Length: 331
Image (tube, rainbow, N blue to C red; front, side, top):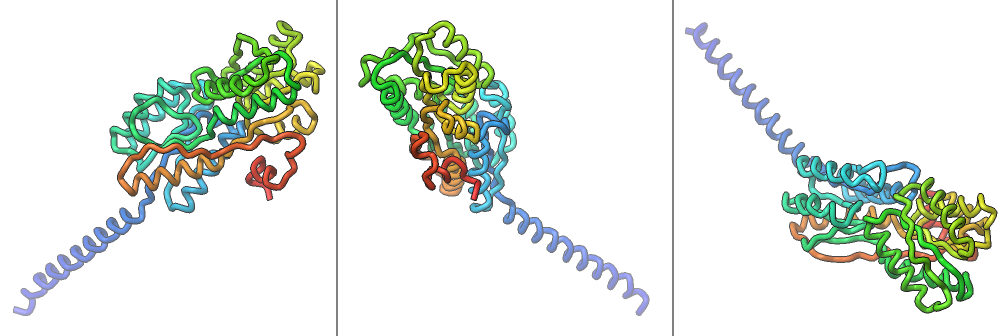
């Protein structure tokens, strides 16, 4: 009788142990699910490590991720002109089903269906730097490019003392930032009727070397050009190098957008007259912050958040606040 009880006791013990392990495993799974961080994809226009602007956007996004305890995955094409690459990235992200996407669209129209598919899939979308053509409500975090470019135009007018001939080199024709900056720059020069803007606009296709070559073409074709506008970091660098190599430093006034260490040096040397410095760190940081707010609030609103800009010249480049803006990660 005693012997027959042993298998029953062992069976009951085995069941209890199995149940205990099952409960522990289930509780662990629940706990793991609770501790899993929301994922935010930061989809940039360019992940080239040599472009300071996008490196700073990425830093801002990642710091916001650490503060908000979300996982930020930064990605994007190797070049701003790779529209098809960004389209494929957005297709893959849709399959991954993250909490949110922060997007800088390489093309205003061609990225539209991919961005709308993201939102149709229940994924929060916030755009930064460059918006996408859509009627879907979403937050857009960026510089007011028309206003900043107006300031660039006015700076050009002052630098040329109200008369001269000006050429424009944009960074990528399909980008809203290129279009808006060209528009704003022209508007900024309207108060200077004696400054002639060349009818032809050159596009460097987001390539420094091409911007360099285009500048040499302009200088050969229009030797009486007295000013050039470069619409971003890539274009202003190419133009500046061409002006310097042609021995025209100080003779041609160069106004542009963005900054990095080389741009700062070229301002110090007098090759670049002024640049409109944006706040890319704020774009990345606010992009992730707003995306997570929208994700938790379960709603989509239309809002434009202007991150601002500062006109940087040789006269104000060493002001402490401007140094922080130009070199946000240096102490």
